[in-house]
Image (cartoon, rainbow, N blue to C red):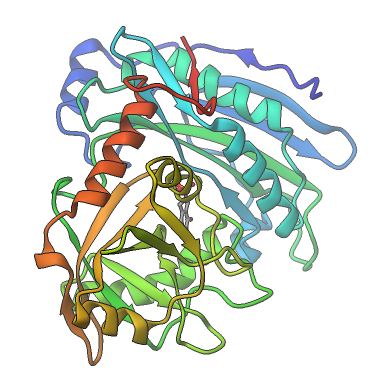
Length: 362
Ligand SMILES: *Cc1c(COP(=O)(O)O)cnc(C)c1O
């Protein structure tokens, strides 16, 4: 049990109803932030302390804070959904709390107590409840993160950390939520290597993926698909989403978890839901050569990316140095659509939740 208790200091001058309504009319993704944040501090002597819900404000940070030099940083991403009765719910927050602890371990950071992690999310959703969109694709995106704040330029795990959660009112991640995305096959850059930090949710993995993302954008692709760093043959994942392949015989394939693949909670939920639906899900390595061949023969009928931010997004086209192929006429396929509906309905409390995933906040 964690004995960390959160004080609440409400914002003295939150934005007006008019300002908030205008900001939320077309929020996009990750641009519109709420009035509050949660913070807590850690020092090696005192453990976690000074936890509070407070007005959202810039963080005071010494220029020698370790995070600014050696990137000792982790984050999470989860959503609060509006329910039909005007309440709000989180989806599997304990899975995010656990992954946050595992990410901290990998980055040699102080673990944040899992119960306190969940409480921080609930507190923020409660105090900023007016910022949860009630539009069909809208939600309140929660971004917990932790940074090394110790003032020291030596290279070692820091002895001081800051935990923060901010929240953003969001619409859908991609411009056209019913459409498909085109992915760029990154043959030069890799995202994560065996023994590296690919399974931890840390900013450094994203920093390492941006040159590939820029390369993708230059080729009119929205996302990057990364191959394994050792053999450059196996599909691993997208820059921030896991990937599934759908076959005409009702089989789904997704790359098996390893220390270079982020264990997505959406990925895990989809595996469960697909199996309940009678589909066979195989967590097996899948090569780029097999992908080309299975599309050519028509054996593969769909491919989709998945993650909290983008939910399930069908992949319509794959481009690369020597590749340009289309999957299923580049429209959203029936398996991806069906799984998406099943998942979203559970998240919003519209369908039976057999797994205890739906966690009401109020
Ligand atoms: C967060 C993330 C995902 C998706 O994880 P979810 O828990 O489903 O949101 C996939 N890949 C990477 C690299 C990520 O950072």
